[in-house]
Length: 496
Ligand code: F6P
Image 1: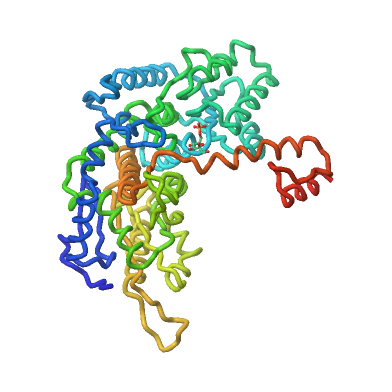
Image 2: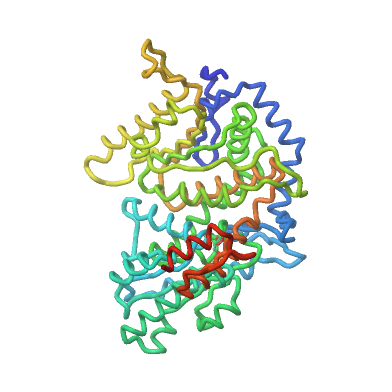
């Protein structure tokens, strides 16, 4: 693979001032041409059009994947079975704005949700806290996801019950971790002498299952709906993103949506050769074909984006970690393993393997041009941060020879550089939408349905009889159709 620099114009792509530099992918011009031609031939352009048009691209569940409608601030009609969804989306925006305006005297928000009902808002709350000068209510924002009571105990030790609001966030409203944690928080409110009406006032739900939320005891006025055509991991743009609006204001939330909307317009309209999500997807595909890569890393050189790789893990691996395609046939390729964490910290952890390990692992380096604090040291530190980012990419690409084999760097390790002009709500929204669209593109190119997740169900089913056995405290559980011999022995050990 040649990693000679090409003319900047051939490797630099940009949309809304987000720059993608693919120079270190080592893909020749003729290979790029072939990649775009095969993408075109596979019907990618039609897939993109179908996605925005509300066609049932989630074929296994026979529904559209229309999260783009949630950031369609222009309110251009988006039709599902002939009915425009935008009035309902707009109504939720109106209610979020109204809630923001009446949100007074709240010290703590406990956001209860897991997976797609957690990562997006958690990442955004964390990332935007680093934006210099951002207006914030300064509430303590607690994210409660794990069924492990350690997280619950930590949060409840810090929250003030009489000025806490609880957001129960679950598309299905049947997720065990979420409903059990919600019950525990309600119990805590009761233990702390909150009256029935105070508790009713404190509880909010965000869900596509309004009936279940009502049954749980949430008042109708406090339920913020979203819809089955929004996948959980694509849902931060719905009322799932409520914490963003509550902490940083509705205008900031709108900015977040606006950044995503701008990327959607780019993804929808730009030719494949200039289309950032498409180029990123094709680069990964190339490395899969050429080097059989099994993993890729995303390293944001921005502490504010430390949660980004975790968000991306669900997005990519839950969307595209599948062995069969849309037609039930085995796939040649699907999602590689995704990992990463903020640079430069990551350099002091697993970069050894990236430089000298036996695997070739492509990397997305994400950098932000502007420093993320107004400390007097900010500019000097930022130059070091950026220089580290650039140096790692260069070292990985070019490698280094040495007489001592220990000091040989093989090089030819591909990477992208994604450069954001700054990190604010707009560019955070843009970044997330860029990757969402890249994930959808990869799914389309692999002919995988990126919008279902059947593989997460089996373990949940098996957990039920195991829980029952653990709760029985018996240590003579026998292997059965539901519990095999290994697991039975483990249960018996735990129960003894
Ligand atoms: O178990 C996986 C999953 O279904 C994810 O797809 C989803 O984001 C998460 O659980 C939470 O689901 P819900 O929002 O329905 O509680």
